[in-house]
Image 1 (tube, one colour):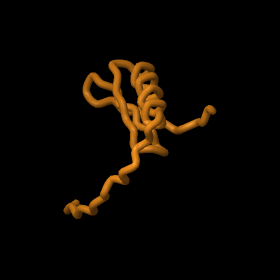
Image 2: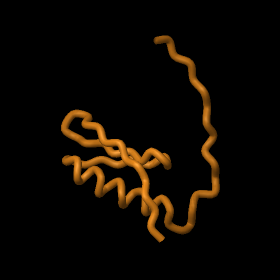
Image 3: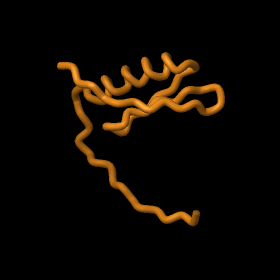
Length: 65
């Protein structure tokens, strides 16, 4: 089964960082294309069996801006 996801790519120094918007998965690469390819693999691995069964505990923080 194929499914489409959205990715956001930014450059941090010499690295490109790709993040999947729908799931909490990110990867990086030395080029824009490599970061997207690595993200695709990371998202595929995220959905492989066994899937995570523990829901992460989220905490709220406050910051002064």
